[in-house]
Every structure is written in C-alpha cells, then in structure tokens.
Length: 77
Image (cartoon, rainbow, N blue to C red; front, side):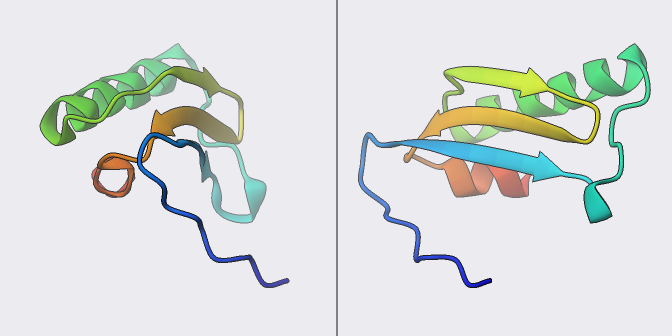
C-alpha cells in the first residue's frame, strides 16, 4: 500500500515509529529499553530536536517530535 507524501510544515508534530523487522520484538528487557533511551537522548542532543512524548513497546517505539530536524534524529538512532 502506498503512503501519502509526508507534509513537512514547521511546528507540526510528527508521529515517529521505530519498528522491528516483520514486527518482531526489539526490546527484550530493561537493558534494551535503557540502551534505546540512551541513544534517543544522544540523538536529540546532537540534532537539537525535541521529543514531546515517547513510548516503548515490545516490538516498536513511538516518539512525538516537531518538524525541526526529526529526520536527522531518527536516522541517528
């Protein structure tokens, strides 16, 4: 299924999803979750991007981030 082109408007919050291949688990324990949060923290600091909210689930992670530098932030995870 084709996706619609993403609308990039400054100030708009993007719903970012990081998902395991074939929806497989990406977090198996608290060590995995803490590792991801550490990488997220570094990525946010390096790109100057903000994350308004996040959630870590077994097979994916969610982040709400404004337009500014969100692509650089996700790429550095």
